[in-house]
Length: 220
Image 1 (cartoon, rainbow, N blue to C red):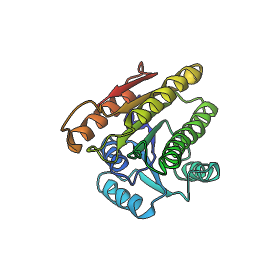
Image 2: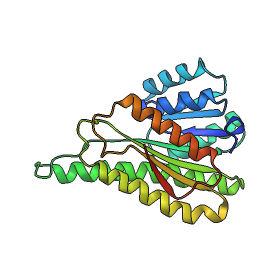
Image 3: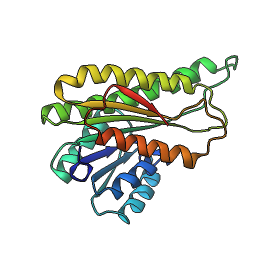
């Protein structure tokens, strides 16, 4: 895919991961749509990206409900008059509670449920619009971790991304929609965010650009 002619939707754009990806794709001259539920952080990312490119749009969401996502796509239709070619489904996983913590079960369930719901609803809504518009689209599920000194539960998040990526790729292949995933390699020790960030960016761009990549997850 030619990134310069693509409409790229980046979720969680106000987070460190989302902001980093947004600035990179803004530098590649694509049309970049930023969304997040945190309005102040989203605007900070927007202002940084505007210094790089004029083809940047932002949309603050109330939540990740289907109604909010439909409002996002209405905004995209009004702003750029076409659906996204690329969805970068950015997500930051949270540290999981210790196994014997008193409220471990509730916290664990909430974290995984929110992550799964966010990934799925954005992926489903975007894929539906790509299918309707007969676009050769790309969905990239990208995950980072909130605290690299405590990687508890990261295996669960990685497994979820891998499962979604592989199953979506099979289902969406008949519609020429590719799906890939990028996760940090949690087995590495003493890795700094800057190095992880560079790897995440490089792998995400590779998946978007490579028309033959689908159904696999790359470890940064």
